[in-house]
Structures are given as structure tokens and as C-alpha cells.
Length: 135
Image: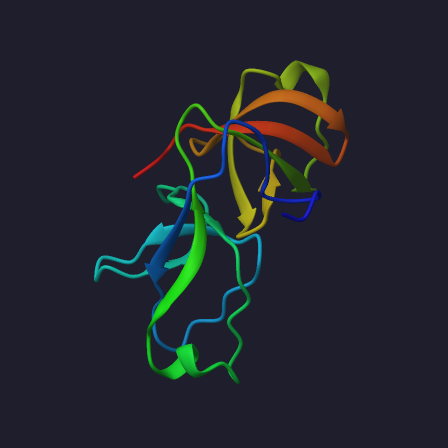
């Protein structure tokens, strides 16, 4: 996985094929959430998290118009990942606090959230997290 986001650092990857939603663009490293129809879509703040997308699906991909399966790394609450911070600045006092996604691939540490607990600060823009709001 890309070492700047969605990089699993503890435990073994849990690779699964999951259905995508039609007319949805996916990027490698997007955090995913169920959409209520059985498909998985890129997640937003406050949504329950299921795992990380391991493929790109663009508008030119056949799966964009006709849903099929795509590779994911499904996460558990014991798994830890690195994730970049794109809103706010990560500081040592945030260790143990919870925050939400800013984009499907990055964290907002400017306000408390419920999706990720920060376990370690690697830099002001990169942290180690565990998922705490899972499906």
C-alpha cells in the first residue's frame, strides 16, 4: 500500500473483494463505508468505516457503469494505519483523541470526531491511527 495513506502497520492485511457502486470514482487508499445497498463507497466524516480501497476505478473503467467487485483491505478495531492530516496540525497532546476524515484519504484534526483514535504522531501532517468507528 502507499506509505502516505491507508498503510497498515500492525496485523495482517485482510484482502476481500467487495461490490462497488455504479457511477462512483474510487482511488487507491480511499477509506470505505457501506452505502446501504450492499456496495461500498468512499467514506466521509462521521460514517462507519469498513476498510481501504486497493484499486482505482475511474469513469473509463467498465465497473464505473456496471458494478462489479474490487479489492479492499477490510479493517478491524485492532488494526493500525498511517494517515495524513490535511486539516489542522497534529500535535503530541492529540494522542488518545479521536478524529474524523477530512477526505476519503486524510484526517481532520481541527475538531474532535469518532472515526479514528490517534496512537502516535509521526509529524505534524502524518499520524498512526486505529479505526474506532467500524461497521
